[in-house]
Image 1: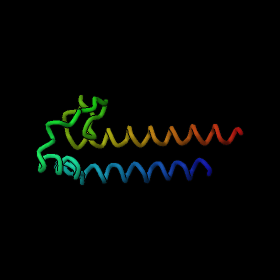
Image 2: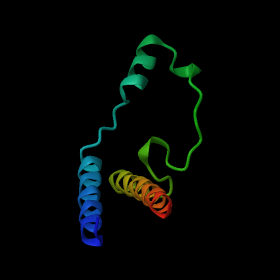
Image 3: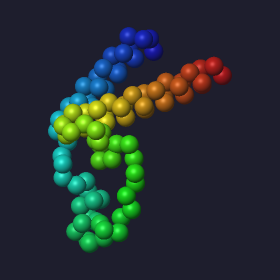
Image 4: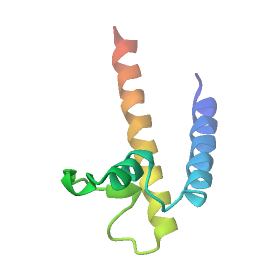
Length: 91
């Protein structure tokens, strides 16, 4: 793939992340909903992460926080696959 194609794929991916963040629901996901209904949500062990619940803790605007978390995740995945492709290309 040439650099222009990679740039376009990254741009389209960023637009998808932003669009998905705008339509993201604040309701619990399916697993969390079932845990609440069946009464074992209080037994769940919380994971401590940098972006819990798809948000960045120091950004108070929820939509902007979700968009930022999505972009960071996208860039991490893109970088990981780019690094893997460079390693495989050398072999």
